Amino acid sequence: MLMLMLAVGFLNACSKDESGANISSDLQPYFERFSTEAVSRGKNINVLDSDLIASLSIDLPPTVIGQCQHNSAKPNEIKISLKDWQKFSDLQKEYVVFHELGHCILLRSHTNEKNANGFCTSIMESGGGVCRMNYTTSNRAVFIDELFNN
Image 1: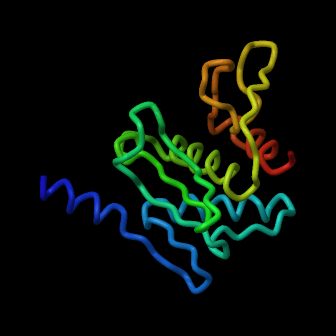
Image 2 (image 1 turned 60 degrees about the horizontal axis):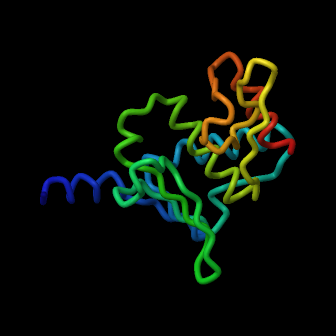
Image 3 (image 1 turned 90 degrees about the vertical axis):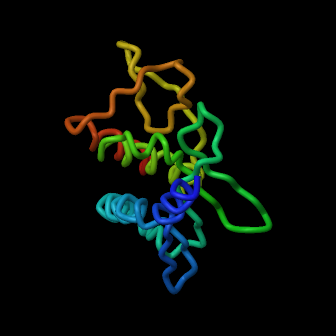
């Protein structure tokens, strides 16, 4: 048990920049990627300039991969399941981080719009099975365009 607690503590090591963002070092590259994608689409968004808190977590419900919590007493907080994170590919990690930043930074709600084939048209899908997600390297740009342009 002690080893598990130490491993979680290590994986949740956070870096805090001058502005107050407190982001787990494992998540930080994806947060930086989000900001880069925003700027490339004409949006002046630097996640590291926010008061965001983000970490890998072992206390999310089993069916929850990620969560953006809004609390008036503290800044937005993103928690991502450590168990799922360890199994995810780079693209899957990007997807879940971008989805949660869609909530916390872009203030987007879920949308389950789908195309004629039943595939989701947005990263902001609810995960409830209304549409099927098909986020791949070949259609990644289309999903990211939709994320920042709605």
